[in-house]
Length: 371
Ligand code: C2E
Ligand code: MG
Ligand code: MG
Image (cartoon, rainbow, N blue to C red; front, side, top):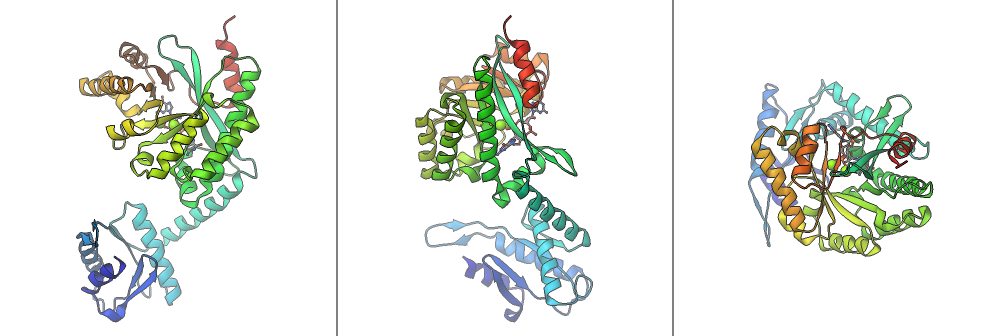
């Protein structure tokens, strides 16, 4: 495949100006440029050529490429500078959604630098005790009773303040820090839940989010087993939330891992259902206990008949597959009514409470305890 890519790129440039500079990275040297439009045109042609399907012995392959362009002398006076800046532009093109090219700008180095800084900070965040777990209540739709909580991580950054997961989870995934981070969240949340049980509150089902990078079988099973053992929380109270994309790309190995978790007594939930592939086949093929409907459906279910119909259908379908249904992002009373009328089992959202720190959650438990 790499050779075929090189052949295609070579159509547009002299062979001596092409080099493979990394596993799947090529460097192209263009000289005698008349205008800055020239490299852009070449980049566009290369992208188009790569977009054509490749034929491999067993299958066709579809590729996209990302191209970064740095110009001498504006973007660097020597090879190292030019290559580094072209690389920064390439990363930027990737971040912008791939299959595109970008010219280098100084701002890209600043972005790359901030990212590097954040990455270093993140690696140390666990040791420095800067991560926090917030808990969002989950209630029974009929009785409004508190039945569970979702653990949601935050980062108390020394300079940036309380930082939401949207700012650092994908960085943690790219860098692999997510494995350590996820383990910490799991252990912290299980211990907390156990403490609530020991304090005599009715037992809560604790939902914890998993990233695809945590799916490595031995590591995950050991992590979960240790979190349960060291906290003393029973497996039946743990719900692991998986995303649709994790199951879409799942190999047999993943299926085995999920079955082993199930065998330990842990429950499995699909998160944000409806935003991804919404495939019915994985609902059938994977050992799941719960489905969480994404908030985008609920948002319009009380105003738009199509959204209402879809939400109703998801609930009915999930029930016929013996899955418990949780709605997330419930913000309005009308939505709660809609959920009750359509048989949704549980709900979570700002109407009930935002995610809150453990001590605030303890207060909530005290208030909702029967006299
Ligand atoms: P999620 O698992 O789908 O979590 C629900 C998100 O919806 C949370 O955002 C929550 O604060 C937000 N939310 C809850 N109720 C409402 C509502 O009524 N209205 C609106 N607009 N939003 C509501 P948050 O805490 O920012 O977390 C975002 C995502 O980050 C989570 O989405 C989850 O995918 C990820 N995440 C959080 N903690 C972890 C973690 O420990 N590990 C991993 N791998 N991912 C995590
Ligand atoms: Mg979740
Ligand atoms: Mg969700």
